[in-house]
Each structure stands twice: as structure tokens, then as C-alpha cells.
Image 1 (cartoon, rainbow, N blue to C red):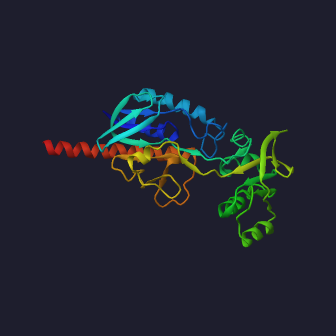
Image 2 (cartoon, helix red, strand yellow):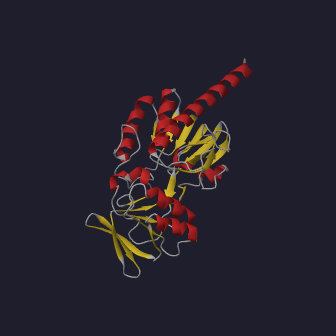
Length: 308
């Protein structure tokens, strides 16, 4: 019986495991080794680790867990049953483990449009977040991909990094006349022609449209909607947010007693647009780890009082 089983070994899961290990808790960390940012060469917005390789951060994080006795399985979880104080987790290896508490930290996966070349260039010329990658291409010719009201907001956000910007809507823009007027008044061109493919050449991203037009840009930004990379939260019956993430409170507790969520997967109360950020995920892991330890401490105290 583990005090906690953590499902997901990204920054949220690793930081929670470290904190719980330091609190002398018996912890199992399960990780498939397929992080959302696998295609990224560098992470940004993380104080003292700006430009750091995210895979190296995971390697270092794992090595730091050794001295705290954290058990690690290079496997994901496929089924969870049980309830508070006795959850049963079945790994894809067939191993069955039990835990008093659970932390879901398996993250989200990106939903990418079926445009030839986009998936291959994801994280290498096609980026989801200007906060993460905008500085490196500031003042360069850029393109944004998307349509509707969200694309309108995203284009104006990206405009802070470069005034040389075009919004490609890959078909009808679905932006009202007022929105289109605001874009053009700011000098942001709108191109509704569907894209045929995206390719990299000469240190640039080439956008090839079905009419034969080719635009050469330094980078393309596309805000990808994410979905949970596992159905475990649904198996447990966790309340979900409108955006498809797991709804949690300020201490990362889900709607199911004994189950916590942290990282990209978690949507805290009161935050309309939770950022997909390594440093935020690590911070949530620390919050969840501390909350789990204190909840276990209180449960043990109450049990001792009943038997006294």
C-alpha cells in the first residue's frame, strides 16, 4: 500500500514526488515517457532554467528522486478502481498496486489539424505558445493559424512579438466584420485560402496553399486545443472543466475524495486560462504534494484518536 501513486512523470509529477519523498512518504511514480513537450528543444519562462532542454530536466528530476526512495515504473496506468484510502491502479505492464491517495499528472495531448507537414514541424518551426517561443523570433515575419474569436485574440497576442504578421484561417475566417476590421486596421493581413502543406526550407517555414501561393515565414504559431492523454480521470468520475481539463480547487483536489490533479491536466478554480507552462506545472505539483501529505497526516491522527 503506497501513500500515493503519481501517474505522470513530467514537472508536476516529479515535483510532487520529490516533496512527498522528502516528507518521508511511500510513493510510486508511473510514467510512460511520452511528454507533451517531447518535440521541444528548449523551455522558457522557468527562472534559472531558461533555454534548458526539457528532457534533461526530466532526467535530472528522476535522478534526484533516488535518494528519497521513490519507486519508479516506466509504465502508464490503464485502469483505476476503489476509493479513498484504497485505490487500485493497474499498470499497462499488468502490475497491480494500491494507494491511499492518487495524483493525476499525465498531462494533455495536442490536437493538431490534418495539414501535411505540420505535425513533423511541431516544436521546430510551428509553435503553440508565443510566451514560450515568441522571443526567439521577435520582429521576424510570422504567421498565426486559426479561425473564429479565439484566433482573433491569438493574433493580437502574437502581434506584440512581431508587427509582420498574417493570420491564416485555412478556410472561412469565422471572424465577424468588426474583428476583421480591427485586424486590418492594425496591419494584420487575413488569408482564408486553405493550406495544402507546410514545409521547412532555408531556415524558414514555407506555407503552401491550395491555390499555389507560397508564403515564407520565420515561424508559424498555432494554439492547439488539448485533450487528456488518458481517460483515467473519466474512469474515476472527476468533474471536468469546459476546456476538457480536470477541475481542481486551490490545493489541486479533484471532485473525487483522495484524488488530486496537477500540471496541464488540471484547471484550478478561478483561473479562466490556465497556462501550459513547465514552471506552473512544477508549482502545482508542489502544492498537490503538500496537500496530500497533510491530508494523510490528518487521517492518521484521526485514526489514532479512534483507537486510543
